[in-house]
Image 1 (tube, helix red, strand yellow):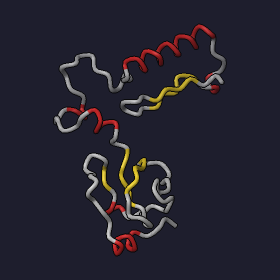
Image 2 (cartoon, rainbow, N blue to C red):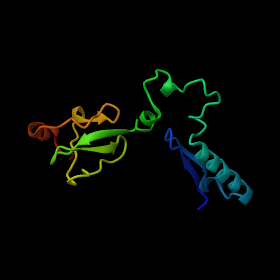
Image 3 (tube, one colour):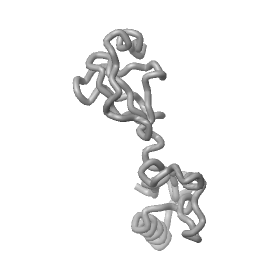
Length: 137
């Protein structure tokens, strides 16, 4: 109940502003932290991804290749299903979810994974490739 956390929707940074290990929190301090979170939600960016000068690009934008959508999708990959061969969006660091189409298991071979930025709907997996992918054991 005393935990105050915030996850930035732009850069996915995780902040623990207050937790039970720090002890009790006064109502005034709690309101200050909640106001900080509301301001960050309103702006849509946290202190790590917000710029003071809008003409200076962030590190991810320096080369001009990354759009805001690309930056938000950098933690996701498209993985093929062993059973149906269709691709499902997966988080790179989390547990692998079953296929959204047939609820089958996803292939774990990394050569068939694609970033969302480079993936397109014309990519298909042949039945022979689906046998090579293997299942997670």
